[in-house]
Image (cartoon, rainbow, N blue to C red):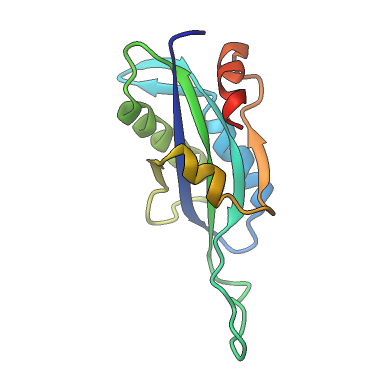
Length: 151
């Protein structure tokens, strides 16, 4: 697919206590499979790594309680058909899809997830070594192929 849009991105949100990181990643990746804009749907492919954004625990401090929400993040790439889709619109469509998926799984969490474009370099440099890889299952082969060089 020659006319594809590849957007490096950062996704972050708070999750309820005892939420699992792998499940969070699967929810994000699954939400990107079919995006919708003004009533029309289109394919998407999300690939990247998910990780916890826990506060550092310094000497003398106690770790966060098991009852506290935890922040999770993802650094990765969203691929979508180019043409009429602008990066801003695709990100807004992904944000809506992720918000719906998270609400369906965890209920109303308060603030919606943050989904925004970043530099490609930031994805490579800021992804923690311990992060878990996730991607959209059963995505169109063309979108997977154009994204691979970025991963």
